[in-house]
Amino acid sequence: MKIGIISDTRVPGGATEVPLEVIRAFEGVDLILHAGGIHTPEVLDWLEQIAPVKAVGRIHGGQTDGPGPLSLESEGDPRVAEQQVLQLEGHNIGMVNNLQLGGFSDEIFPGVIEARRLPDGAVPMIVEEFFGTPVDIVVFGRTLYAMVEEHQDILFINPGSPSIPKNLVKLGDVAILDLTPEGCDARLIGLAEFT
Image (cartoon, rainbow, N blue to C red; front, side):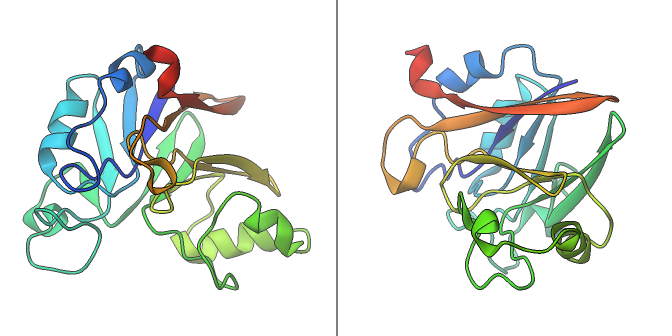
């Protein structure tokens, strides 16, 4: 199974539209995971022309991922939940916009988990506590910093943003996750390679 992963489209807001390069980057995907920072349901509709979409976070007509009465989650959009755990190809994928792991005082940026030098078994335990169930893949967003890192047999994927990476208005990244019952492989895709 080939999965496209995107986050922090923030349209309208930080960007005026989802870059068309996403279409080419997601060519042949079976599913798209949107890890929050959505702003408007039209983004999910646009992505759904490529493949089915599952998303996390809240949509608030110009504001994203905060509490409020206008969230698609509360309005029953079946694509969106505050967080999701998906079982795909024998893997448990935990997906959330804002990954707030116990014992970490800051957001999860590239290198942060490694720098903590946690004892063996600690990372799976912290992640299970967060999602309420064991997961072997964590998909998240919010930071605008792309990363693919594995720690204690858990794969962490943040695709960054396709249009405002690191808060700079330019082409950014998405990620591709290839899943089989035997394993998984994730890689970042720089959208600039499709221009």
